[in-house]
Length: 217
Image (cartoon, rainbow, N blue to C red; front, side, top):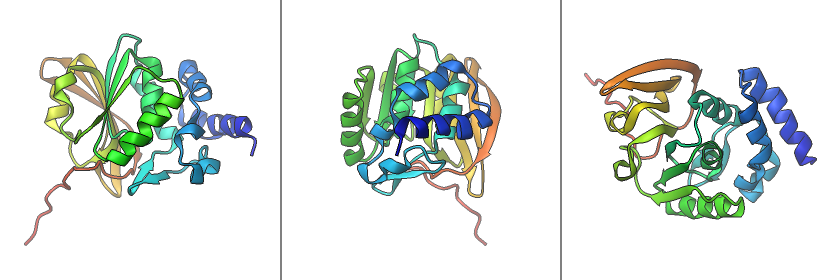
């Protein structure tokens, strides 16, 4: 497989049609080698429009969702970012290229190890990988200019909103299958948040998040 051609096709056929047109984001997709964050067994699927298994029942999100999220956050080089759900480390590497520092929290020890190795191999030095349950954020390193949640949640956890600084943005997929909405929530003033719906999607639930209690009769 011609890797550079496959990368180019991914960007032109999957990502641009999703209105990801920020040249800095598109350039970054050429620079951060997605295939280096995919388990060897799935390397030939690195650029496919699909979720990729990374072990422990966890999945790497489709490229267009990661690219769209990155574009909508419009990060600055001075930003402090929190990622919840590290997975293979690919999204952390993208976030790190646009910000000052990324704290990424992963609850599965084997994925923490995988992400650390992948990031080190890719020469990414401004990411701290933490082992823990990030469902309520990671307050000890906050507040943050941006928070990215790599799994869906039934409702937005208050704890995450409280860890945004004023002007900070939270990118999160909210809801339960078959209806979920990717949202960008901006903290406009202390305790005041503005929510924009970005797109509909369905992604796996974040580890450690309870489903909303359903009514039983």
